[in-house]
Length: 292
Image (cartoon, rainbow, N blue to C red; front, top):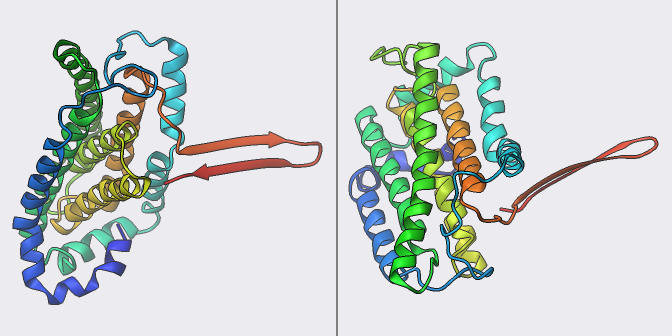
């Protein structure tokens, strides 16, 4: 969230840009995604293994696969980095101070109302990206096979989002934290952040099965990450959440999006993150690799 203040401080002097972002821009972005998808929406063909996306989705993947998927999802930076950030914000008054500063200055969206509107638009864009990328994946040549595979694959995504929302609601009820604007006692964690993170994680996973240049894939991955970060920051400027609420929501959303997708979709996702510990006689070597 903090990098937004570094890269976009000039927005404060350009109200017309802010207005476009909070109203027309997100609608146009959603429309652009739809138009892009229409060119490849047939999703015909098969994956490299000869199967279709969603074809091997199952309710019974086996405990070994479930365990590996849960561990990998927990170890991915998109899960543990927000958790660490949320913990850091518990030091002193960092959490409240940044929340108050963002809501008072509104450096990106210029007003709390604009920020609230933008968070809704950003979340809707993430949901659209999740569905569009899923429909664009190759799921077979025959219409019957295609429909069945898509139904199974989309069900996995729906389950991931549902578990994200269920966990978010349970924590809201359990923690009973008052929002910064005192509009309710359901501040922790942020539902917008968790749902957006889950959708963007699923969309990012889907990109792995689409044929496109590597640069385009990296650009879209960066765009989905920006959607998640922007949604979280919008919730701060709208005075609905504290930074730890948003960061916890991002971690929850990514974890369930990655875990459910990798465990139940029945596909072996290429691993962008790798961590290994190798002991020697005198030292312990740790290897960390994250290919964005």
